[in-house]
Length: 450
Image (cartoon, rainbow, N blue to C red; front, side):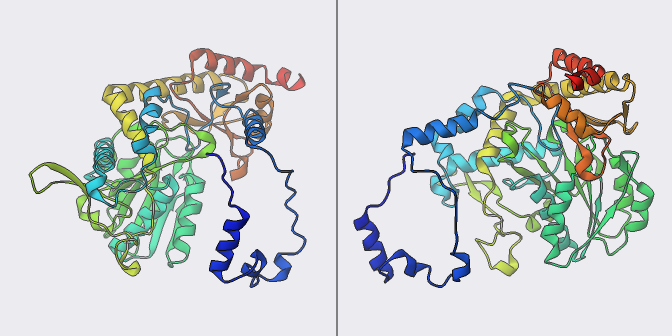
């Protein structure tokens, strides 16, 4: 919207109301060392037209996946988003709505959150879902805190095969409350089950596993279930890709106690990394330890269907020391996009998305491993993402392909693996795109010379 400045007269009135004569008096308590030699290197003032033109020029420097061939993943995926999704979430009653505290005037918002919760439960097989989390990483951290609240045990075991950024967030969330984090190493693309057996004990609150894991491979969730639940009261936390649940076993089938994940792939674009939303689902026995909002269905005084916030244990509703979390938002517009997306796709549509992603990923993996110098990092099964060993540093491969507006995947050099490339494939990658990528990999040395 246009910027409307305050007049000198209005500023003077505000200063007088504050009991000062000028702005510097307002910041008199700030040490001078922090105010001296401030150089923000700002340009000269611009008009609205000039600012708009400048911002458009900056935006034009970006490339989207509609203009490139992209195999980027690592937790955020380029799935197709039907045009109807953006149309619905752009309606003013949704886009401008803030928070559903007043149930009597928020029935529309509460209804779609209720429907969102229902769909997450259907996907995961769990009994109850909250209204959403900030993102998948914070949902994982909140799940660990939730397990500690339930078990009163301050030791959590986490698989090293989960997204490294999720692990960082878990460590950040748990550091101030004295929770010990123990990690289970990776072996052949999956967690080492023997180490897991040795690390779990009756003092462990939970074990956190991701499947498909960060490297793209599917963990043996049923074997992990037997190991985890052999420890007294230890909870099993599963981090999942919601699209994969259209094809593989639901977390409920391998007895996960808490299920979390990143929901971006459900109707939300990659958008350079955000905004995102996390989902969290669990069983009824853990409902009072859940963080965030929870919408329930009931009947009003006239016997008509009504929706309300229920089981409220957020910091905004009860005493801080009794609260289950201080999460202030459930990224509601993003969860609305997921709700619209799932309604449009239906069970068959989501299954088609998953099958295409699976089939194309395996086709690409087969063709890449036929090229000299390339091989799969693990023989373990995978869904739509996989890791390959490369004949030269993966970061170098990315540099070569980026010059041709192709994003071949993510170099895992930043995580200590210079020769590993993480490649994701979705239904948006056509066979022509995949074949072009394969041909360019075969001629990579020639491309580098050019």
